[in-house]
Image: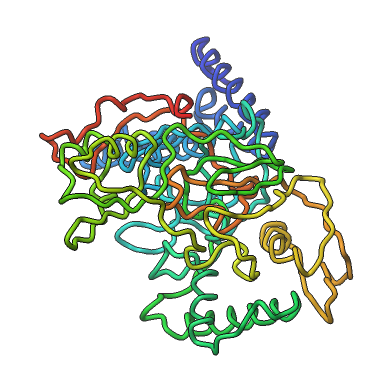
Length: 474
């Protein structure tokens, strides 16, 4: 006979209603297996959950008290980070001066709908590696299929978005910041005889790039002392990146003279967009002027001759302010336009550059495209890697899952992400589309900002950025 008090039943009722609403939101009834344990914890109390509290050994009581608190905290953090929000720190300057290195962001996973974890068994507060032990922080099994719960909205044009690095499915452990595919192509190219790509047909071009990649990948695998072991990662365990969404599913994107065009119309540039310039000065730029204009030490990559020559990113405001200093600045010129060592798709000779890129059509769920050997390099990775198909080219014909075809219908939406620091950002120009299953969440506000160039008693904390809403950063 259950002898539960009215207070116990009320507590149980509140908890079970909240839990069932949570399962309804997830659209997953597997969690119902937990209900009997909740019932026992509040009503029947058959399982001795707090047996240690009755122990006469004070050490046991103290130790188990700490264990109980730590386990509860880890479970709470696990669910909060998975479904509601997480902390993210800006590690690089790719979004400056919109978001700065050292900005700590409150990232909402509810904005676009949280993903059901594809690797549910993982250590909270780690992305893929356990510190100190330097091993995986997750188990490969069980692995669940991609599913996203209902969110407060969808990714909109010019949103700043946190997502998993698409090219991070395979990484060389000693150089994890590098894109393994670009790394292998470049290594294979360097190890091979130079070939004039301009004289080749699309099929011949493909064969050459396949050869480059095979040679480079073999070299990487045979030199673990330089590259480390090549490891694979599931989608939700890949590195977190933050960029601005400048292209939506179904749009055609092109960059002409640095300006992004969508379906032939120029997209609004971010207020704090930066481009790199060659700045010639009459000596070094004063530190106080650089600080006033937001020019970090990283930005001040100076080479000194008879005059100082800086190769630095500047906002329009900083550029105008420097031009006005005739006593210091001789000239400011655009940096030469190039392909920065290889742009997406790396296996196609496009002639595109960082400032003049495309056009590319961004895949949209349910939309069908005509496939040719000419456009296949652009869409090969989404078809093969992100949507899990077998793709081959034999005798100039395209085969998907063993069937010859000249069309493909996409199963997911894709996005085009770029940094606001346009010449200092590894973004979609280098590794292509971001699939919807890689979207993590939306930054809401900056809760802390630390200047890496300043000391704690010399402006380390950027007080003016605390609780700055990311939505206001246009």
